[in-house]
Image (cartoon, rainbow over all chains, first blue to last red; front, side, top):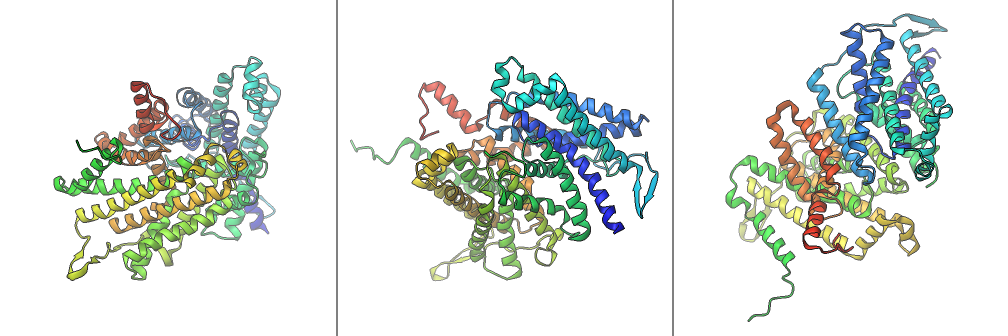
Length: 286
Length: 332
């Protein structure tokens, strides 16, 4: 039983990070309608910024995370303005190709600057807790708490502020939003920045547990897409529920069903779900 | 004066000239390196043409296309290496197996649309790669399949035979296969079936309302597309002689997708032009050493922003401006 709870805890930890990445992705999809494949590369960039600040400059972990988020928000806005805005009127496939181009630029740029080796964060929150036979490090608790707080903050931002309201309005009806005098270009810019900031937060949080390396975004971006498809593209609750579900599925499935094929469980489940419900669990009908 | 034959339109003459030119390549190419580039260009042209059939004409972005290429490649490799099957049986088998998996995959996935279809198929592709990677007893996993023989000679009457042991003969074999693939694709897209493909691409509901079954149409297109992906994979195997699981993974799909998009989707020439030009650019960028892939990314992104319809689409727009003619639906 202890093993089971251990796996559940691990699943929740993984799931909360997945949710953060997926939340950013789904926000961007909801507003701009583009599947941003470069999201994983931005997540990697966030992890690197936090890692460098902590390990080389000796900056406090929290400050490093915030700097990474702000930095990536700026990078995200720059990308939106330079790459995705000119492609707004073009077919989605063009945005997809542009995103692949961005992955080439960012991943190989990171490879050139920081080299191919895996980086390990210096130990930060290493305290161990033993509860009912389960062992958990403080680091993991911090990940879950921070991820949940960020998700709540994001939700409050969207529901309680004027900027948030314009984001929600744009997601519901782009033309209508323009008609009432809201600058949708600015909404696009802000949304993209928010989304990439969330990716950076996820990268900075998971960095101390996993390792930091240039291609770390690859596996995460695929899973984030699985999550937002499962939850229905553009749906915020879908991204959160989907993220936790995927985390649990991976850790419990990996512990009990198959270790050899555990990383494809998620993809198999997605194919199965789509076969039964082609618009995802929470997706709107076409 | 002899009347000018009607079937000799300028377009056909140009095409005939082009085919003569590619057939004459062995007369002036001796370098193995150039042959290698040409053969790979033919193989990727075939893969891109098959992806274009579904993506460009039917409007469905199958991100498992590399997986079907890999299924074709592994079917050929395993049949030849482990079961000693002749290449000329293994190659059609690869096409059939890839098309069969295409059928199985198409049944559930084609109910979804747009991004859902793209990501759903991407997941299927990942599953295929992992299975090839882990199923050691069959596929040798990470070690890969080594020493896959080339095509067996074709016996001719009177003791003569066509062998495939030189670069030139391999080039001809793959070139002929490419021409056949493009010709069949051309026949498909110009037929009534091809028109239903484009109707579904335009608007599924509308197509449905005039009596086209969108699901069946998409499935036909999907199976045909995976059939030719399998063919390209099989030929790749016989040429390279070595297979590892990476040949089925999503990077291959992205590569093929880039060829189609840069060349111009929904056109016959586009994917071929993309598959020829991009590897050449990539090779040229080797001079930049470490910065090669960064430069490639920049080129890709800038190109797709400024020439969103690809090389063929861009040329058509320029042609249109020069002559002032309008594009009709037929030659779009």
